[in-house]
Length: 329
Image (cartoon, rainbow, N blue to C red; front, top):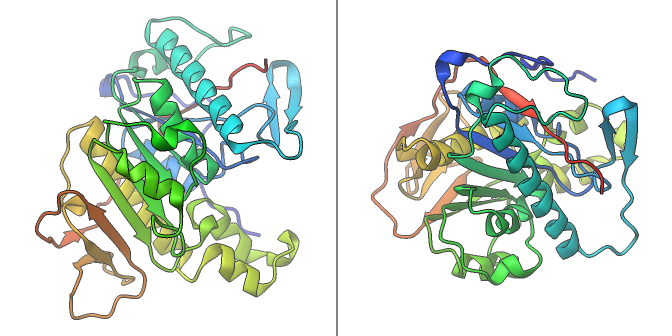
């Protein structure tokens, strides 16, 4: 199996010349781990975001704490997703608090190990967004309700549970679904949509499956037998979209969304319904164009604006990433 090449380095310094950076938090799927969306996290870091990925203790499969102690998944059978999401919201609140301590010049590391060079100067809680995949995406709304410091959120194909489904939310939110999952098939999304009073977007990635929003889309096809997957199962969970194209589309939309709401940088990519076509030019065609679309991401927003043709942006490399872990209770 060929693992993707990354630009990540343990303890990498942060360029002080960048000043305070906008912050993004990432929550993985149920029993997932903080590294399962490296393709998206690394890209966002390369665009100048301070990206914090969370391991949720006793939910994630394995969380390593100082001293080498391992805390594994301890969730009992039949655990309610609404309870899991409430705990994840508390985890997120904890992490933001620790980030605030770093921004004020403190070191919250349990063992008082030196922080990456330049992190104190870059950390801030003033421009903060959150996204997640699967249950991690379903946890974003609860985290936003629990902590008003989160300015914008994005849910990558995650069902919603708990009271956050029916609570008003007046901050920007993006729903990004796979081919067979949307507001027509998921009542939690339909209910939640009605309570969104900030800017709201509902995107569908045509040809995708539920696992198209994590790195599995690249790993599973290389060795399906090692994961106990037959070809029909692969198509069911990954869809038919090319993994590289899927990653490209998600990177472009996540960056455009958070750039708009955390940096006040407008992108025509979010202006109107349009179709992403799988071509080497990496362009976006307005819906109704003459060329037959292969894989599409349809954007619905309120209110709609006129259609535009846009180009996917190129990014420079130079990641700024950090990992924080809440202590087990």
